[in-house]
Image (cartoon, rainbow over all chains, first blue to last red):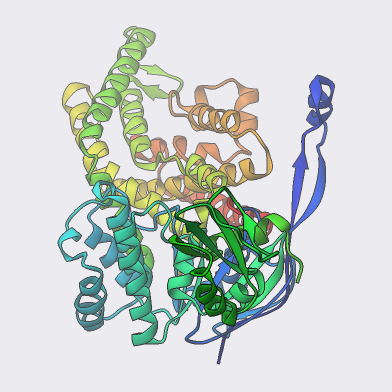
Length: 325
Length: 262
């Protein structure tokens, strides 16, 4: 079954604009100018149940707006949308029982009361049985996230990492078939990030939970997602395997060689960086062994580094160049 | 029973800050006292003024302030802030109606204030000033019903103003005006039948009188029997009208909702 089926999903906002200067401000008093702005532009997205999909794009690309349509918060301007078989906006109250949502920047827990009070409340709101609450929630989710000892603490006293783990637990309390994560690792230190990633993989594997994840941290995507969807100015510019994205956009690898003394390099493709440092291009995998066997004939070698574009760089390049598929 | 839970959780949340409330009780007792001495001077030994005895007036003021501690809430600011900051998104991922959730939350706050503010405040007022408590149980019951409806009218008005700030850009001024209008036109400081005739004529067509004046008059014995039932009927009418308006405005607000963030 398809978890998400979006066809030509579009969201337009009316943006009011302020006129410049004093006379502009005065004229604004009597009605502002507004312009229509397309935050999400004819997005087609098909996600199968059980997938983990990374949804990426630069700031303002329309990621959050998409998530807010997929979760029933915003009404799409046009297009059709079904998530878990529901129309998220029109059937919101029934639909949201089938999803869990974590907004990294906002808390869904009650700030002033103990974590377990929030959980208890959510248990009743989502009508989770006491048995399920004990065995599945306390026994598995809380256990794996390691938040058992935080249950009696008020949310406002938690560190960001502790809070985020509690947020994840809260989002999973009612066993949602689908989990939306909007920047779940923002501001977290590396060890907490690793822990959260491992947990998400576990949830996906154990319960078959579909996960859609937006993030600025490409290492999240590398760790979790085989499939990425990239958005640019409201449109999908890439939808496919992460490994293909790397192959298509990484460009050539190259090797940087530092010699112990000044040498003469005949290879015309080599680029001399300083007296003893050269960069050799690697058009294909075979080129590396050929290069290495030839190197020693040139002179004593001090250091060899294979230069490969990191996912971070690839994505940054794509954002900056404003890729069109 | 999702909404019962929301009442409970708000009550618990308020409990975390219960210390803030003791100063509130004191403030209201001082208000009541201030008005009591003011009116004592105005009466100046006369028995009756504008069809009310001095004892009735004292009772009116005491019950007026203490009931206010029950129905008062900041729903307008809460809603305006949530819409502006985008926090409304968190509410909309939950399986209940946003507005009913807000109203029940406010009711939880009201119950808290009832227990920790209104009741002790009222006891203090009765002890300090010559307040004439009603002698009949039926009066208390009628007044409780009117108080509940007063809560609803006030809360719905607040929601309506909260949503209105969504369409108007400046919220602050509107909220101030609303609070002032509510206190003034509801008869919080002064029974409405002592207002000038033209004002009374205007106020009759507004919902504010059903928040304070009518319940207070039921308590002081100024409205009894069918007149009291008429007052309650008017409250119900306003609840229905305001609920319809609120639903309409929320439907529109929802469609134009913009939530902050990329």
